[in-house]
Image (cartoon, rainbow, N blue to C red; front, side):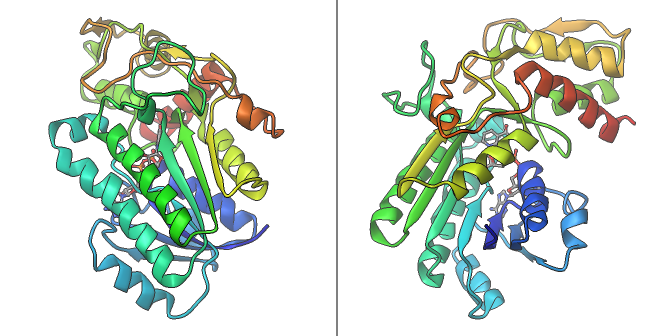
Length: 321
Ligand SMILES: NC(=O)c1ccc[n+]([C@@H]2O[C@H](COP(=O)([O-])OP(=O)(O)OC[C@H]3O[C@@H](n4cnc5c(N)ncnc54)[C@H](O)[C@@H]3O)[C@@H](O)[C@H]2O)c1
């Protein structure tokens, strides 16, 4: 189904690939980004498409609502895909303003834009970080929700604001709780960070933690398939899903580090900093229950480790050649 879409975070890793896919499907897309982390290169293909338009705005500021209203000048928008956020969890632990602004206020003002422009559908990029540190597999109704990072806290607060907006003025909401998403055009993440470290210094590769951290990884192409599939197949007013390859499918940081070394710098030794957590706010191990989305008929193409393998090649090709 084609739509007129307002896409926040359009220049980012996931947002830019989502823009390409929505355009391919025949939607028109107004992308919003302040280029805090996203890049103009990521938007190269979208900008060449006649149905794409870019608004360079800081969505954490109240004036963004007026700027979007003026830019759209009475044109109808069907749905907001809200992908903008701070994607650097340690930066938000160091300074909680970062997630307040880029993760929560961007949601707050995106909702205000929806309200003022009469946009009735809202899709949100949430995160496994809303669950906090649980020992058992996470399903969508796992509780209690006590995040251990400001990033997770502001994603959870955003989910709350979106559910309140559904009561007040939206017709339909989709909340997708992403796992670790990997693939080309990455702007951050473990594979991206490890390759950048190697480009700076090949004498040894520092890996945070002891390498035993183990999480589900999903290729960005599968994530986008899942979201588009679920959004087109809405069965409820409030739809919320974990997205991952399959139940319990996960990959260790040790595997990822070894794979990066093999691809980029086979002679370099790995040096683990030790401890089970990579950094404050890191949930070192988690496992997702994925049956809610699978029962609707969605199937990923790649498992967690195949997604990592493919992403290492894609990111290394972009950064190293
Ligand atoms: N990549 C993952 O593994 C992952 C996991 C869970 C959730 N998510 C969520 O998915 C979404 C996309 O993540 P990503 O990996 O593409 O990250 P990203 O950093 O590449 O993309 C986020 C984009 O938002 C933009 N942005 C940030 N603050 C803004 C502001 N104030 N105004 C306008 N634009 C702003 C950035 O410039 C960037 O282009 C985010 O909401 C993120 O929290 C990602």
